[in-house]
Image (tube, rainbow, N blue to C red):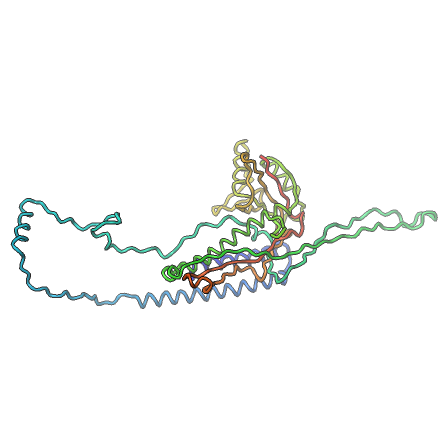
Length: 399
């Protein structure tokens, strides 16, 4: 087990708790029962991680004490060799080499050649036990949508139409018209089903490699989690909802279509209803925001509508910007339309993780035993649905 992986998981749990508390504080509501359960489960997992890290530190300290060098140096005794008499031929050759400076014996040295016959084979080598991982894609869906644990398919109700008030004439005007009634308009409702779809991967590793490389088991486990994480982001953005999650680009409200400019972005913010401003955020590909800044520089408009932080995060028109590598970027050739989303995603979208948000990793040590291998399998069942379409607006970037 790698302490880096444990600390990474702890950081994810703390970030998830912080997000829930911030959302509840902004909305001025208490945590729901589902969120309370998720918060409690995260606290328990954090406590377990702290205990595991403490135990790992204790084991490491113990190993260092056991492996400490002794104060006495052990020097093996060389065997005594009896007096040797050199042949006359050897003596003649030796003195002749000294006289003519013609030494035929090469000095010991290191060489990069694989067939070297000198000292190269004697040099020990060691591989760094740590394994740096490639970076995961930029992903924001799980930070934006409301994430809840599920045990079965859930029907999520929502209001599909509002009631409408109308003018009413005076109750009684004269005997011919009598009493005038109020108009009747009732709200209508709909439901969307939050289900669960499986995604995962399996990796087969030989017993020899698992035994010889101590860090491999923890690395492969973390890599399975990264694979599922990367896979899900694509469907949370682009999914069509049929046998897969409903993505933002197929469920949110289409607001406007225009070339990339700050004017078009301002129009996009105006299309969002004021009730969603408090929790509103932008979602786009990082290259889209960079292109927007370039476009403003090209027109000599240097307003500070974009602010950057040292960690790469940004704000646009005062609203936080979240980035996703799966958001489309405009391209003239081949022709691709870009997109920018703006709104309160946590009110409009729900992610349901069947049985909890943890990515499950199973070790199958019997399936490939005849091949001398172990299979590690990671998976998660999840779904995403749009509950309130108007909460998120989409701008299509056409130039």
